[in-house]
Length: 109
Length: 116
Image (cartoon, rainbow over all chains, first blue to last red):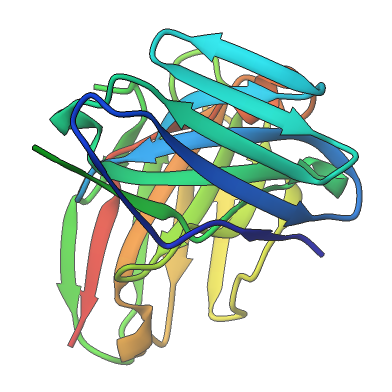
């Protein structure tokens, strides 16, 4: 089976940098994805890592270490609109995409 | 608008009833996924279809069933509804079921089901 762990809640101030960690256990691994979900909204795709290293997309970066079964999402220059839930998701055996329970990010002034 | 269309947006029904949720994937996407999200919970994978065939199954109850039709739209049928089935049901689509394209899911706005 597949299981993921991420913090339930993170709080940071506007303009700061925040890192959301994700550890996973999976039988078979193809990659780690990150999705953002605002309250009442649909999840939207942020990034995907299949290989070790850092992928940067604007203010957001995502990192993967396959040997450590670990990844993180880094959000820089935080804005109020970044307040949302962030889900890591692993593509494992059978190409099944399993989501973590989500991290609620609160950005304060 | 993500391009994935789900209907109905809201649905209120009673225990023991049966409902059907409908999803039209984004144009060009062949794979459809169904997820359940209960209050303050993560996204629970239910089932995945690719080009009309079932590809992967998650924690889908026997009271639930789904299918993908030749025109690629999908329906999720929920029967003998219980209070605990109240949740947001998301449909998502992707270009393929394997490879990098499989990991970029486009979600619909969801169908909020309330069972009274």
